Image 1 (spheres, helix red, strand yellow):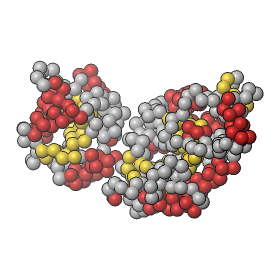
Image 2 (cartoon, one colour; image 1 turned 135 degrees about the vertical axis):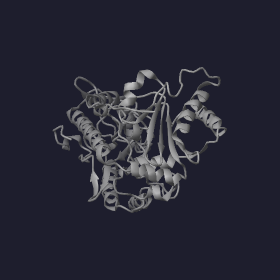
Image 3 (spheres, helix red, strand yellow; image 1 turned 60 degrees about the vertical axis):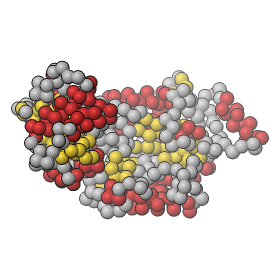
Length: 444
């Protein structure tokens, strides 16, 4: 084992030693072993920081000693930049010929590391997202060598949960870029003109209204921007440019869903769809650098139909209610129940008693950080302690209403931090449906 001396080049963000010791002790193990096919594995990110490696693992003893094992010599400088003690490819005997494929090679590397760690009870908590078949093969071989394994999944989730220091600063930066992207969408929509060509959808909607055969949205004219049709794809391209300029990526894409598409909460939006006046447009963005941000706003260009206006008011009131109830020690699902009662009092169905496809159909929020969805949770099920709000949690609050028949969806989502003074909104943006009501500056 060797330790890098290049302290000035360290780009890792090593997890807090005290917290690491506590979570390992909670598993009843002597060490935590996190194995990933890439250092971008969310379980590895608290240790590996911004470095980019292929197959690698982190071995952490309860006394705070940690090592990084990596398998490619060309990644030696990236590995050194983590600031961790290193187990290099030569130490792990990566070049040695072995029968049994990738799982056997992994077993040899992990066995070398575990024996060097001198674990008194040979008890290891395992986490990470390494390919299941190869990892299962490796662990089976290591069990024959006397090592015992238990799940370290919940332990790593607890380790990742609080966001402080550099991690909180990074989330703030990603949130600021998300704010700029949403302001950019509002600017595009406010600049959009209306096509003089009558769309087929507009004609069908008019015929429906005259014949009174079905309830549906009052589809307005198609929108144009900078001389061309304003499509979901155009908006998505502008959002991507904003994030690229900020050094962010969108590994899980985004949701830009107009009208009936937005009436189904996880519909990503057809890039070829032309946006129209008088319809809802849900824009849900969740980019990342190393950590994620997450924010949603709903827009409508021109006069919004009455049912959309009513739903928007109800959702905004629900968001304010949820924010007031979010306190340290409060159970997330208890806030979800209050939001459901709020919507039910207004006549909207909710999923409190049974699944529904119209009304309030999803959960209130989720933790955000190394993944878009992590702790704390706001579910009825799941470990109770993982659903109790704690100081330094970062999470979303995102009530919404959806009506596939009427052809609209509304969701308002804020990214929040639970700090010493209560809830801090990390995405302080307007909530207006009308993009023209948004300030015309590009500030965060």
